[in-house]
Length: 423
Image (tube, helix red, strand yellow):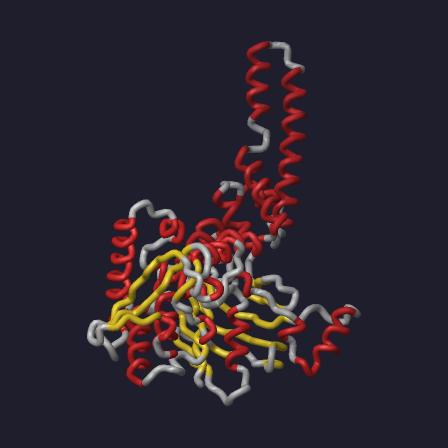
């Protein structure tokens, strides 16, 4: 599915954005404090790559000038919690195919899905469905259309169709009971056997029973909810928001990083570093449990080679760089949070100047560039991503900005959309 429209209300500096269009590549342009970052943040919280970022807070996010009036209106039940974002997605053939296979090509009134989320922090949805078309398709596949047509054609909802099928089942049950009573009254054994066999034919068919059970299950959840939860929700794109606060530090204490990962309490700077580590084919557990030094050195060297070939090629300003990893026991004068256990260090070796420096000590532009490339490249095989870049390349030299554009042109998957804000 592809995001095509968005509408943002009552969030940060935005009272009402009005609905705006979104394409494969969309740039948000406006003056400072006009709401560009707010728009990206509202979109991000719809379905963030990091689920813990998905909540809206009245205290932190509602426009301050009117938050007290809003809270009072909600408390007095004069209005429901406000919706912040509603986003319209165009459904594509691969998502529509299984829906049409079950309910027919006319089941959807439009090939669109609208998602809504606000201060209630519940993901809601709107899908236009045609229950008559869905029911007719189910009837035809069960070969029951003629039976229902004989009883009544005046139905338009699945509830009405189920009522007709229930009535048909009761009629069949009564006919069977009557035929069985008549058969039992026959004294001739052969005639009685034939009459009982004939009575069996008047029973409700298995196809009718199965269809009634299917309709009952659909009505328990609702047709639109069934379609959403079964076919569409798994395909909702994830949003990846990236700004300067997501830049990696380049070194971390491995046990502390593992603990944050297990507790779903990652820092923003952890995401690109973990992406870089995973992209290199390394696993944190393996780095702590190596039984032979040579095995660790070989693993780290292979990771360095792979990363340098995969990523460094996009930094045209210096072709002599090589990304490297090192794993060492903590020392007493290491950074304060890295003085026990084992640490992982990311560094950059410059073969022209014969110097190796910590990744975090490189220029802001370099760290931003590789933090983004590392995280995105690790996630690029995700089925659907929508990238939200807040002032991308602000700290980059013009040549590095050209490199970033080249990376996006070459590596951004067709399934991934890009929304970014101008400075």
